[in-house]
Image (tube, rainbow, N blue to C red; front, side, top):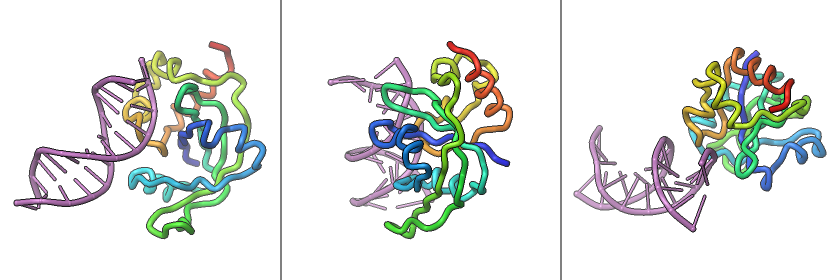
Length: 135
DNA sequence: GCCAACGTTGGC
DNA sequence: GCCAACGTTGGC
């Protein structure tokens, strides 16, 4: 089981959109590093769903429902499919992640521009722990 | 709205 | 193959 974080601008595609869609094709990724991570995703891997822009917080957990396949729009790129698992009790903001020493190595902080990123089990568990209590 | 960080492009 | 110029992302 691996863990990941997907970033999205909520005005483009939000957690609420995912809930109403029940599943979605994660397409449009045009970055090689991000594509390579997507290629490593396995079915049932857990995904932290992060809103960028004015929100900047992890809002929910999704799961990989279909592993990477060629983007029908452009075979050089890949897409995956995800389904919502559950909304976090309390969203975990970027500010909270920054203040948590155990999360200092998260790619979210190290490389804020990467939109598909790996998360360690320990980091994932820590995020879940933070989401249990309000900021 | 600004700008730092980073990836990509293209000239050499 | 290097690197300057440029475009994009995303936090502030």
